Length: 250
Image 1: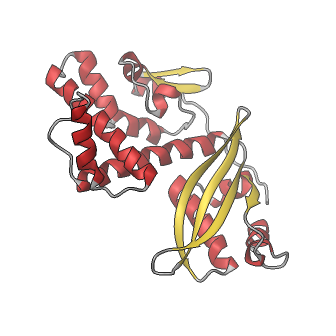
Image 2 (image 1 turned 45 degrees about the horizontal axis):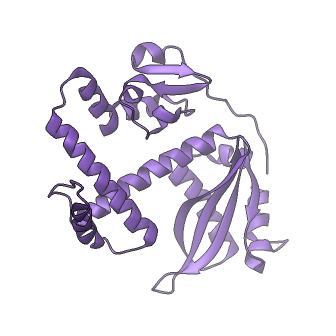
């Protein structure tokens, strides 16, 4: 990979004035409002290293932050807090459905099962359409978490495996592998249809997935990308025109 100099983003003290809820400790950014409500989710509760003003703006406009702000100021009623608890249960059901690969229509009977357990899931948002929306929200949060992880790390690798969908269209499943603080993780990045399974198409799909899903520039990609993993197919490992070779040439 061609290494080149790149500006390292740093924390801007001016943000502490623009965002009164912001706290900067141990080289991480935290939201004091969300933390005060014992919230356990979100990058600004665990500590964010995505030093972009856009990240702060997005958090300030997020539903989670606004809800915690309302609770702290006393503007949120008991009924609204109950609705948040109901939504938490619905999100858990949607997550289980997505992880198990079950149809979205399972949301209905899972809610009935929750009620049999004595849980209050409410009467709204039980449809397959709402289940799809919940899963989309979860996916966006996971993608944001992976983006922050890749941006804060020095290096990462890409793992790729080919497959075909129900229409027998060639596709690639792309994963990100990295080590942060001694912990090695592998995370799903993208499922990309590539048309023909040739090396150039696969290489382009990997680069586009990194650009579009993680909002990385090509400069960042080829500064931090240090490894490529695949099966032993010649299209992947060919020494003259395999995917690994094409990525090295970038």
